[in-house]
Image (cartoon, rainbow, N blue to C red; front, side, top):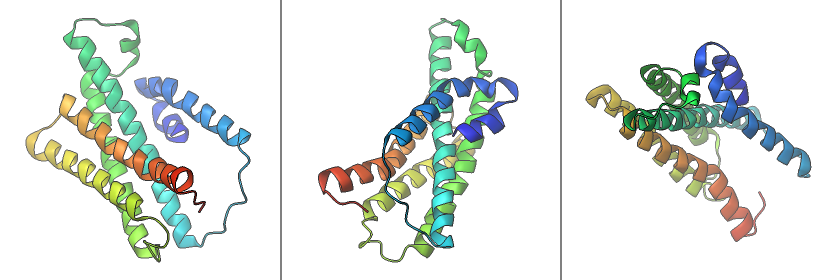
Length: 191
């Protein structure tokens, strides 16, 4: 997320996204540095491709969720006629909405490639405890796809787009972190 924010947020008013993204990245790096990780497993190129696609999809859609949050805050402030100074750091509402749907489109394509590579390269879905992760990821993919179709066919925008984006991202977060927590904390498995 930090790399994407640096590359795409450096120009224009999207630099405001860094106020949220960079502290998250710093906290993540600190947590990683304090945690003693076990030695990573060697993965073949197909699983590495799947992992990189998943990482890029997750980062792109997480940025979409942040953009959706900014859009929601901006719309809310405008409806209440309370324009705060920090709102001036954000792009105009229409530009923010365009950025939101562009990032969702890119993230959707990457998530589609992730799911496809998972189907092609994962050997045993049940033995690897990936069913719940797959189901949640597919549900997220369906919501993001439904949102894009709704935007294209019905002109969805604003609050509806924000809600769909945040629910789809919540499912994606549960797909990774939730499944990892269930496997490691509840079931006591490490793999």
